[in-house]
Length: 377
Image 1 (cartoon, rainbow, N blue to C red):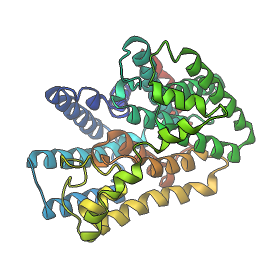
Image 2: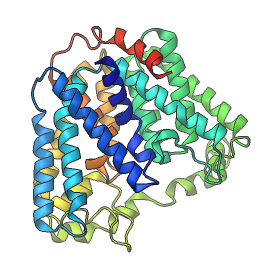
Image 3: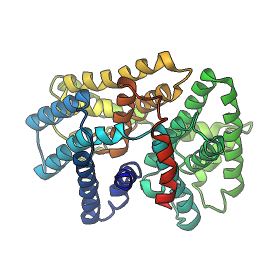
Image 4: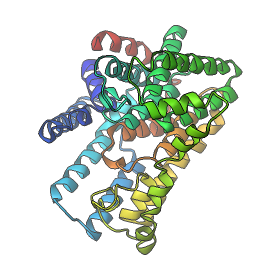
């Protein structure tokens, strides 16, 4: 059962189906394998109920958007609906049996693939992603792992993991990762002043990136912009930050959203299937633009609930505030929410840990996490 648990976690958290998406057939098979493993784990585990808000959100989104407009091949709609329901229903039991340390160690090992990508599979792109295929998705995984790293024991595992995750995240050259790393670090200092040492860890990771950047053939434009942040002239860094602005992308869809605010424009109409547009790159706008105000309000409510639920305990369980704030911001940069196994599962896990009683928070399960290193290696 433990082996099944960790294999399923790896499939979900390392985005294995996406890694093989270069071949539609292979990617589809790995996606179905992940769904199958979740179903198998669910039937072999204790049943403790469905996480109702996520279930209602999915049912409303797919029902309304499908009724309003279902263009293209209905197979995509059916597959997305089935996968989402399986992750929400079956993934809830996996989330309940997954400790913070389980999640951290799994993601830490997964993000190490970014380093292997940079060392052994260099290309002209200069931004590295490992198993996560897309550098921005890899940056998401890194910052989520960083949120989970605080208070991990033993201390040397925490420090090693934080440095590895920070270094790997910098190699993605994701602007979102850098901003969220700083935000999470600030929250950690508010929780415990000793965490101010993490800024030194971040500077150390930056120095390593600057030292080996040419050897790893990193993205020259973003590398130079990162360097210029620490020089007297930061005009180039500002121009790179402003380049390809998300707000500019969002604005292309405002008319569609305001024209159909109650029931939206239909399934995948803001997800880039129109060749004239690249997709809204914002889950909030995607949901209200495709399925209207009702699932949008539930969506907003779920994530704000987790944020406010975590605030009273930010001194002892800071990861809840960190993760909630991180997810809220990450969702402003991606429009593939309903088929993003990593974000859905982490959101489920956080919601469960905010609403259900755990033996704080991981003492019963943390011992199992160390076995993941042996199972994976």
